[in-house]
Amino acid sequence: MRHLPNLLTLGNLFSGCCALLYTLYWQPDVAALFTAACFVFDYLDGMVARALKVSSPLGKELDSLADVVSFGVVPGAMLYQLMSGEPSITAAFGPSFVNTAALPAFVLSAFSGLRLAKFNLDTRQTNYFLGLSTPACTVFILGLALSAHHDLFGMGFIFENYYILYPLTAILSVLLVSEIPMFGMKIRNASWKSNAFNIGFLLLFAVFAFFFKEASLSLIIIAYILLSLLLKKQITNPA
Image 1 (cartoon, helix red, strand yellow):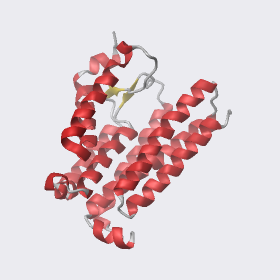
Image 2: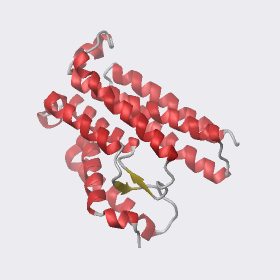
Image 3: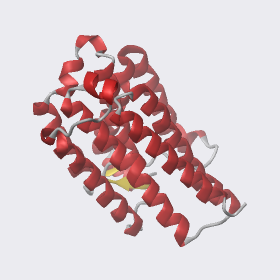
Image 4: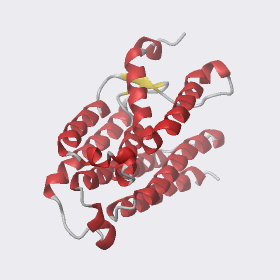
């Protein structure tokens, strides 16, 4: 039983590798399912470790290595595909060529790795995050990929525009390693009061999903960032 958390972490890593493969073959719907599995495994490994009261340096390192793939390389690959703007070619023949103009997408992956390394050394991030978390960044990019793939509201071309994606990569990279306090979305107990923000956030996401479909994934992260900026004092000094 003491090895169960590490097995769940390996499930995260396996799912991340599968999500990467389907992203490279531009099948974002399938990649989204494997990315969702990454989130489930990433949540469960910590929860199970706490329930079993087991922890080890190996588990900590393994968790970060898995997250680098699932929440670092995968969103970078999704961004690369968006910048490439050639999903029909990659869907039919696989990643048969390299688009050098889209390589800056992996700057996001590099900063995701830096963010995870900083997080491991930072003892302040227990009840809240400093900077945008890698899972939140991944959700944002996934929303863009799905919106482009399904040509949401006939505006899919917007999500493949270099003039939008280059600055967006820079902004997200800075947010990942910033010192901006952001809400930690962990459920720690069954109290309504302690989970009021999380429940309200889920309701907001449901509203976004109803009206904006795939784009709701990106919109909810924008709302999360804006709320964190507006309620910075409440995050660092909860009542």
